[in-house]
Image (cartoon, rainbow, N blue to C red; front, side, top):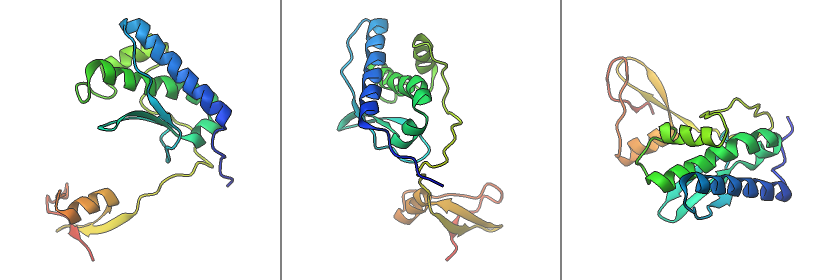
Length: 173
């Protein structure tokens, strides 16, 4: 299997420009001006895009490998998808509405794009992140849990229980 080369700089500039087009279009829809959003091409894994909001600001992250392999699809679908997340955040505030809720769906329709949450793209050649699994057990069986859950248990910030016997999961080692 040959790994896909990340999107070229010239195409990155086109994606940034297209993101700005959707933000300006939203400005017309909402009759207000929206600040430009930071855009990075550093997303890894199976997601083609992600809108992030933190205390340090807002950013749209795009997956440079998926954009390289599925450029036309990503430009037509991922860009308005993430731009809509940014605009909904600006209009309604952080945590005030569901990420793919009615406000987001309506804006996607106003953009002229079908409001889809996921896509079924061929990811062959795309470097994917693999999360390590950890062995745990309960009273009735063994379980494999993700590193995120394993670390939460180890740090004492969470407990997880078996759905069958309702017993607490404990490390199998």
